Length: 374
Ligand SMILES: *Cc1c(COP(=O)(O)O)cnc(C)c1O
Image (cartoon, rainbow, N blue to C red; front, top):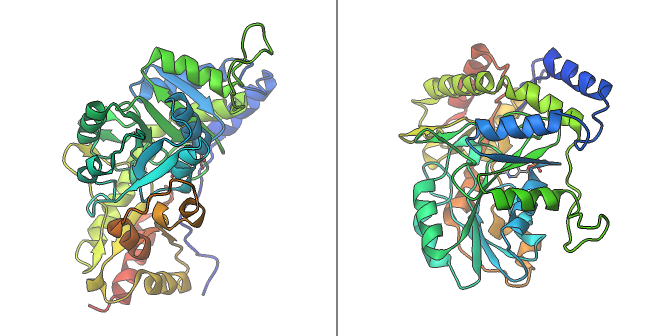
């Protein structure tokens, strides 16, 4: 096994623009986001990119989700429906608000939550739904919004993997009442750590700004409500602005990588490649595949073979229903999620760094094909 040409699942790309922007913000004294211009400018420009009126920058994607659930008025004992196959942060957003996360199983084509399963899970306690645009493919927002309207549920989109993804030319993050983004190191654009809540609702925007900054009241230091300190720094916002300037280029690279993988994996039996439904722009945050029985080896066996050849992979998320701490939560609902359970066994993502060249992709795909027993 050679270590010099190991292919990692992701490699952040930090350019001179980002370095200069951060240094310039520091020189202007933009230590906290509450001083200076970079933060309001980043919020305004990122929200506009998403087709939204307001952006509220926060410390990370997890806190964006937690704060959005609070702002939606979800509290103790309430239930929040969400994609079963997701980062634990989505479930924690409900958990930290003393609400119960309720998993909605995935559908087998896009791996997003299956909208046909939502209605039967709604109870009088259901207050909100969090669709997760997994790996950059938008959820079926038309159907989800219709159900939410019918039952009066808040919709909070988890857009941590879907910056710039569209459905019928509309950006993810602009369908529901709020959209929650992450700018973690491996996300579509990054500020190192960081997040944003987008909304078109003036009242929600005001509430989110207050929640982010400890809910200062009148007079200052008298608090009517429990807030959070989820403030982003000004120099992170400056980095975000530099990244935002390149976002379309970054997405083009991600789409090129996905197209190249698709071409080489197209005829490999038992490798399910990522979908792009009609009317969708998938941003392919990571190039994810599912290893189905026809491949002749399990996902874990294939991952081991690839690792021996210096090719890193990472599994899909462990579904919510299998999280021990959630099973112990009061009000826990044991909802069968066979598709999400299957994806936890069969799914992984392949190296997806933007710098990945065609030769490396070809090498990875050849290794996969050679490992198959079909
Ligand atoms: C990364 C991610 C989050 C959490 O974002 P952080 O910035 O890491 O806190 C939430 N949801 C999904 C789907 C994610 O991929």
